[in-house]
Image (cartoon, rainbow over all chains, first blue to last red; front, side, top):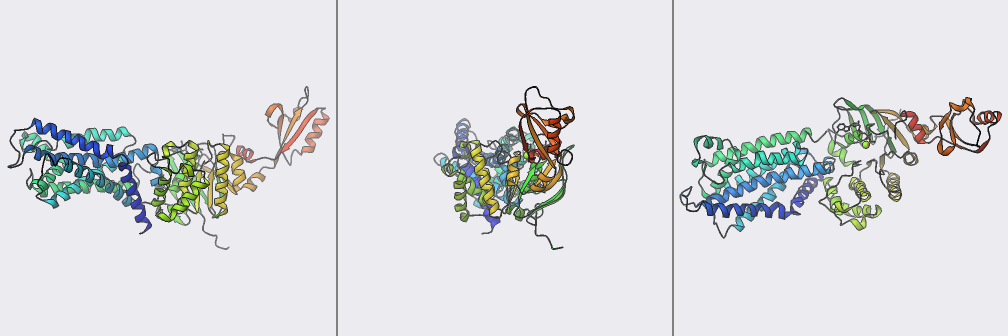
Length: 255
Length: 308
Ligand SMILES: Nc1ncnc2c1ncn2[C@@H]1O[C@H](COP(=O)(O)OP(=O)(O)OP(=O)(O)O)[C@@H](O)[C@H]1O
Ligand SMILES: [Mg+2]
């Protein structure tokens, strides 16, 4: 293995160890939160007309909840790691190391993928007693999961680079990630919305991530799979371009 | 002229401003391979800024730097593999245990398991062996400082820069660090040391650059620097009632512990003639003591009396 590869692997391993050492916070907690949503909403919405033919509300809800949790955790993993290192000052050890922009990008994003894979699998597993989801389009499912996780991980990297303190990340999360992930059709089909909100939802990238992910399970969704996939890929591409530019130029990282 | 060997660090035309403040105003010098080099200067002189630029933490506005012939920007991977830097700030990652931390750091540099014995050796040498499995946050300041030193050396770089490694460190640890640095140097490592303890620099460094207000004021061997100002200090303890003659008043450089210290330029005021003046004036001297200038005196001379 080349020294650069060892460097990349080490950073990846470190990033995985970082969330692994606090699994309760980084995996268990979000799974429990999502489960509570599932129980409460499934109760409250019981008996309502199913969204898609043959799909109960609880079944409809679960993929959205999983994707919402994935979105939030992918973002949290990269952004919190970077901001912690910045605030503690130990980012200098990484900055002084012979690692290039691609190694940073690859390691941080991959570590976030490991975390979201854990979170999503855990959610699927613990809900088996309540909901048995069909898997109609496994490739679509996998593609939507990977592209969405990666997109949010990259967005988290950007937020971590731009931010100078925890408050900045919190603002990002509270005013951007959380509202957009809630208003993305997790709890309802956007077809049930008034015209304005229906249109507005179609500008929310998270809507496509959730809708495309849902397609992977049910083989049907609010918009065609290709549209969801292209939106998500476009989002990933734009975010990655911005992020790589920042890493290459040392934006906000090199004083 | 024979071609000079590759410098360990070559700094050319480096400038850096923070807004209006010019932290570095054109720095040009080289550090030779195998040298024990001192980078001195008062607070805010720009030492850490220069080190940060060498390390790739800060981008210079102009100029270039190479480490063992590798440009720190264009060829940053090769340059960084040759360099180890101990930062001035006591930074650490609270998540990891000491030994794990060092192994991770080695990994960043492409070093695998083969570097583990060296890591354990350093832990031993720096008196950290019993803390190898402690989390970083559980260490005292002095221990964290030693981990920082070990961290800079995990990849056995030929060039090591230490930014005030002995600041706020007790006497015993300071000696440990001195021994460690001296040993590195003896084994061929180029060592660059920043310190405000001038005795330390005088003792350890072969060559010294004094930085002030973002400029190199002087760069010379320690010997040259000490010989630069041919003066001596004459410390007199006068008997009660005796006063210094008017003609010698201008030479007083200090009054330590009730004595008076005169700064004598060897050429203009030979000690013998001063003593003769005192005798002629009937001054009774209880005690006499002379001393050579040390680095501190030279430093004060060159930096206009700013704090070291
Ligand atoms: N990130 C920064 N933003 C603004 N000004 C800075 C920054 N870093 C350093 N400076 C300024 O640049 C000048 C040089 O600072 P530097 O830290 O290089 O000094 P130094 O020689 O290392 O001092 P010390 O002995 O106190 O460590 C100082 O005036 C400092 O205030
Ligand atoms: Mg400094």
